Image (cartoon, rainbow, N blue to C red; front, side):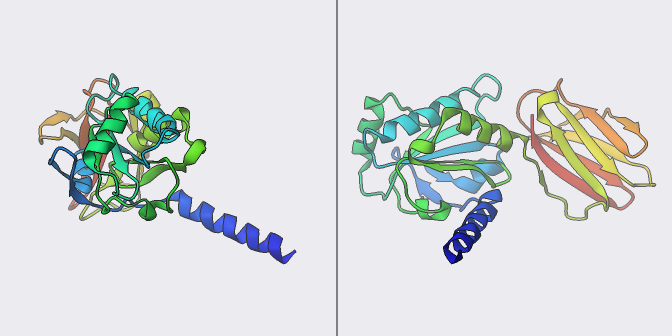
Length: 248
Protein backbone atom coordinates (compact mmCIF):
# COMPACT_ATOMS: atom_id res chain seq x y z
CA UNK A 1 0.00 0.00 0.00
CA UNK A 2 2.82 2.39 0.91
CA UNK A 3 4.48 1.74 -2.43
CA UNK A 4 1.22 2.48 -4.26
CA UNK A 5 0.77 5.74 -2.39
CA UNK A 6 4.40 6.75 -3.00
CA UNK A 7 4.10 5.97 -6.69
CA UNK A 8 0.89 7.97 -6.93
CA UNK A 9 2.49 10.97 -5.24
CA UNK A 10 5.49 10.82 -7.57
CA UNK A 11 3.24 10.68 -10.64
CA UNK A 12 1.21 13.62 -9.35
CA UNK A 13 4.40 15.61 -8.77
CA UNK A 14 5.66 14.85 -12.27
CA UNK A 15 2.29 15.84 -13.72
CA UNK A 16 2.39 19.16 -11.87
CA UNK A 17 5.88 19.86 -13.20
CA UNK A 18 4.79 19.05 -16.72
CA UNK A 19 1.87 21.50 -16.69
CA UNK A 20 4.04 24.59 -16.98
CA UNK A 21 7.75 25.09 -17.23
CA UNK A 22 9.68 28.20 -18.14
CA UNK A 23 12.56 27.73 -20.58
CA UNK A 24 16.09 28.44 -19.37
CA UNK A 25 17.80 31.27 -21.24
CA UNK A 26 21.18 30.85 -22.92
CA UNK A 27 23.55 32.91 -25.03
CA UNK A 28 25.95 30.74 -27.05
CA UNK A 29 27.60 30.54 -30.45
CA UNK A 30 26.32 27.93 -32.86
CA UNK A 31 28.57 25.70 -34.92
CA UNK A 32 28.94 28.47 -37.51
CA UNK A 33 30.07 31.01 -34.91
CA UNK A 34 26.77 32.92 -34.88
CA UNK A 35 25.62 34.06 -31.44
CA UNK A 36 22.13 33.01 -30.35
CA UNK A 37 20.20 34.23 -27.31
CA UNK A 38 17.17 32.06 -26.63
CA UNK A 39 15.03 34.75 -25.03
CA UNK A 40 15.75 37.20 -27.84
CA UNK A 41 14.57 34.60 -30.36
CA UNK A 42 11.42 34.03 -28.34
CA UNK A 43 10.79 37.75 -27.84
CA UNK A 44 10.87 38.06 -31.63
CA UNK A 45 7.84 35.76 -31.73
CA UNK A 46 9.60 32.54 -32.70
CA UNK A 47 8.78 29.01 -31.61
CA UNK A 48 11.89 26.92 -30.94
CA UNK A 49 11.97 23.14 -31.46
CA UNK A 50 15.13 22.06 -29.64
CA UNK A 51 16.46 18.52 -30.07
CA UNK A 52 19.38 16.94 -28.22
CA UNK A 53 21.17 13.98 -29.84
CA UNK A 54 24.05 11.72 -28.79
CA UNK A 55 24.56 11.73 -31.84
CA UNK A 56 23.70 8.15 -32.75
CA UNK A 57 21.67 6.17 -35.26
CA UNK A 58 18.55 5.75 -33.09
CA UNK A 59 18.63 9.48 -32.31
CA UNK A 60 17.99 10.28 -35.96
CA UNK A 61 14.40 9.05 -35.87
CA UNK A 62 13.21 11.43 -33.14
CA UNK A 63 15.28 14.26 -34.56
CA UNK A 64 13.68 13.64 -37.94
CA UNK A 65 10.21 13.85 -36.40
CA UNK A 66 11.15 17.16 -34.78
CA UNK A 67 12.52 18.56 -38.02
CA UNK A 68 9.53 17.42 -40.09
CA UNK A 69 7.12 18.89 -37.54
CA UNK A 70 8.91 22.25 -37.61
CA UNK A 71 9.06 22.30 -41.40
CA UNK A 72 5.33 21.55 -41.66
CA UNK A 73 4.71 25.13 -40.46
CA UNK A 74 6.92 26.72 -43.13
CA UNK A 75 3.90 27.60 -45.28
CA UNK A 76 1.52 28.76 -42.57
CA UNK A 77 4.12 30.50 -40.36
CA UNK A 78 7.19 31.25 -42.50
CA UNK A 79 10.31 31.93 -40.46
CA UNK A 80 8.49 31.51 -37.14
CA UNK A 81 9.10 27.85 -36.16
CA UNK A 82 12.81 27.06 -35.89
CA UNK A 83 14.51 23.69 -35.47
CA UNK A 84 17.69 23.62 -33.34
CA UNK A 85 20.01 20.64 -32.88
CA UNK A 86 22.27 20.25 -29.84
CA UNK A 87 24.88 17.67 -28.81
CA UNK A 88 23.70 15.97 -25.64
CA UNK A 89 26.67 16.64 -23.34
CA UNK A 90 28.67 18.92 -25.68
CA UNK A 91 31.33 16.21 -25.99
CA UNK A 92 31.08 15.90 -29.79
CA UNK A 93 32.69 18.67 -31.78
CA UNK A 94 30.74 20.64 -34.36
CA UNK A 95 32.30 18.95 -37.38
CA UNK A 96 31.20 15.54 -36.11
CA UNK A 97 27.74 16.78 -35.15
CA UNK A 98 27.16 18.45 -38.51
CA UNK A 99 28.52 15.46 -40.41
CA UNK A 100 26.17 13.14 -38.52
CA UNK A 101 23.22 15.47 -39.18
CA UNK A 102 23.99 15.61 -42.88
CA UNK A 103 24.14 11.82 -43.11
CA UNK A 104 20.58 11.65 -41.79
CA UNK A 105 19.26 14.56 -43.88
CA UNK A 106 18.88 16.83 -40.86
CA UNK A 107 19.28 20.53 -41.61
CA UNK A 108 18.70 22.56 -38.45
CA UNK A 109 18.36 26.31 -38.31
CA UNK A 110 21.32 26.15 -35.93
CA UNK A 111 23.40 23.38 -34.37
CA UNK A 112 25.20 23.64 -31.03
CA UNK A 113 27.81 21.84 -29.01
CA UNK A 114 27.78 23.83 -25.78
CA UNK A 115 27.13 22.67 -22.23
CA UNK A 116 25.07 25.81 -21.50
CA UNK A 117 22.26 24.18 -23.49
CA UNK A 118 21.54 21.51 -20.91
CA UNK A 119 19.03 18.67 -20.94
CA UNK A 120 19.05 18.78 -17.16
CA UNK A 121 17.10 22.03 -17.34
CA UNK A 122 14.21 20.00 -18.76
CA UNK A 123 14.07 16.92 -16.59
CA UNK A 124 17.31 15.17 -17.46
CA UNK A 125 18.83 13.21 -20.34
CA UNK A 126 17.31 10.73 -22.74
CA UNK A 127 18.32 10.20 -26.34
CA UNK A 128 17.01 11.93 -28.30
CA UNK A 129 15.20 14.64 -26.36
CA UNK A 130 12.85 17.22 -27.87
CA UNK A 131 11.34 20.32 -26.30
CA UNK A 132 9.07 22.92 -27.90
CA UNK A 133 9.33 26.43 -26.47
CA UNK A 134 6.81 29.18 -27.21
CA UNK A 135 7.24 32.97 -27.44
CA UNK A 136 5.89 33.22 -23.88
CA UNK A 137 8.98 31.21 -22.83
CA UNK A 138 6.86 28.25 -21.73
CA UNK A 139 7.63 24.63 -22.66
CA UNK A 140 4.79 22.99 -24.61
CA UNK A 141 6.41 19.62 -25.36
CA UNK A 142 9.12 17.71 -23.48
CA UNK A 143 9.62 14.09 -24.52
CA UNK A 144 12.53 11.63 -24.60
CA UNK A 145 13.58 8.52 -26.47
CA UNK A 146 11.13 6.53 -28.59
CA UNK A 147 8.16 8.37 -27.08
CA UNK A 148 8.79 11.26 -29.49
CA UNK A 149 6.26 11.48 -32.33
CA UNK A 150 5.86 13.95 -35.16
CA UNK A 151 2.19 14.43 -34.26
CA UNK A 152 3.16 15.18 -30.67
CA UNK A 153 5.70 17.81 -31.72
CA UNK A 154 3.16 19.35 -34.11
CA UNK A 155 0.64 19.56 -31.27
CA UNK A 156 3.24 21.22 -29.06
CA UNK A 157 3.99 23.78 -31.78
CA UNK A 158 0.29 24.52 -32.24
CA UNK A 159 -0.06 25.10 -28.50
CA UNK A 160 2.99 27.37 -28.52
CA UNK A 161 1.58 29.38 -31.42
CA UNK A 162 -1.74 29.71 -29.64
CA UNK A 163 -0.14 30.85 -26.41
CA UNK A 164 -0.23 34.54 -25.55
CA UNK A 165 1.60 36.61 -22.99
CA UNK A 166 0.52 39.71 -21.14
CA UNK A 167 3.16 42.45 -21.10
CA UNK A 168 1.12 45.11 -19.29
CA UNK A 169 2.70 47.50 -16.81
CA UNK A 170 -0.59 49.02 -15.58
CA UNK A 171 -3.16 46.33 -16.38
CA UNK A 172 -6.91 46.72 -16.58
CA UNK A 173 -8.75 44.72 -13.94
CA UNK A 174 -11.23 42.01 -14.90
CA UNK A 175 -10.28 41.47 -18.53
CA UNK A 176 -9.31 38.17 -20.13
CA UNK A 177 -7.67 37.50 -23.48
CA UNK A 178 -8.39 34.37 -25.55
CA UNK A 179 -6.87 33.86 -28.98
CA UNK A 180 -8.92 31.34 -31.00
CA UNK A 181 -6.05 30.34 -33.27
CA UNK A 182 -8.11 27.91 -35.35
CA UNK A 183 -10.70 30.61 -36.19
CA UNK A 184 -8.29 33.58 -36.39
CA UNK A 185 -10.29 35.47 -33.80
CA UNK A 186 -9.55 37.15 -30.50
CA UNK A 187 -12.11 37.19 -27.70
CA UNK A 188 -11.93 39.65 -24.84
CA UNK A 189 -14.14 39.14 -21.80
CA UNK A 190 -14.46 42.11 -19.45
CA UNK A 191 -16.54 43.98 -16.91
CA UNK A 192 -15.43 47.51 -17.75
CA UNK A 193 -17.82 50.44 -17.57
CA UNK A 194 -15.48 53.11 -19.00
CA UNK A 195 -14.86 53.54 -22.76
CA UNK A 196 -12.42 51.10 -24.32
CA UNK A 197 -10.02 51.62 -27.23
CA UNK A 198 -8.36 48.67 -28.94
CA UNK A 199 -5.41 48.80 -31.34
CA UNK A 200 -3.22 46.11 -32.90
CA UNK A 201 0.37 46.85 -33.93
CA UNK A 202 2.80 44.74 -35.94
CA UNK A 203 6.32 43.88 -34.75
CA UNK A 204 7.76 47.16 -36.08
CA UNK A 205 5.19 49.29 -34.30
CA UNK A 206 2.82 50.05 -37.18
CA UNK A 207 -0.90 50.29 -36.36
CA UNK A 208 -2.58 47.58 -38.45
CA UNK A 209 -6.07 47.17 -36.99
CA UNK A 210 -8.62 48.97 -34.83
CA UNK A 211 -11.90 47.23 -35.81
CA UNK A 212 -13.78 45.14 -33.27
CA UNK A 213 -17.30 44.05 -32.40
CA UNK A 214 -18.56 44.62 -28.86
CA UNK A 215 -21.49 42.71 -27.40
CA UNK A 216 -22.20 43.50 -23.74
CA UNK A 217 -19.11 42.24 -21.87
CA UNK A 218 -17.53 40.44 -24.81
CA UNK A 219 -15.37 41.83 -27.62
CA UNK A 220 -14.51 39.89 -30.77
CA UNK A 221 -11.68 40.85 -33.12
CA UNK A 222 -11.24 39.09 -36.45
CA UNK A 223 -7.54 38.88 -37.39
CA UNK A 224 -7.68 36.61 -40.42
CA UNK A 225 -6.82 39.57 -42.67
CA UNK A 226 -3.49 40.10 -40.90
CA UNK A 227 -0.28 38.69 -42.33
CA UNK A 228 1.48 35.91 -40.45
CA UNK A 229 3.72 37.21 -37.71
CA UNK A 230 4.00 38.69 -34.22
CA UNK A 231 1.50 41.34 -33.07
CA UNK A 232 0.85 43.53 -30.05
CA UNK A 233 -2.74 44.20 -28.95
CA UNK A 234 -3.21 47.28 -26.74
CA UNK A 235 -6.38 47.94 -24.76
CA UNK A 236 -6.85 51.34 -23.12
CA UNK A 237 -9.51 52.21 -20.55
CA UNK A 238 -9.11 55.43 -18.62
CA UNK A 239 -5.61 55.57 -17.19
CA UNK A 240 -5.12 51.81 -17.33
CA UNK A 241 -4.05 49.59 -20.19
CA UNK A 242 -3.57 45.92 -20.91
CA UNK A 243 -1.16 44.72 -23.57
CA UNK A 244 -0.97 41.25 -25.07
CA UNK A 245 1.43 39.71 -27.55
CA UNK A 246 0.18 37.03 -29.96
CA UNK A 247 1.21 35.26 -33.13
CA UNK A 248 -1.04 35.22 -36.18
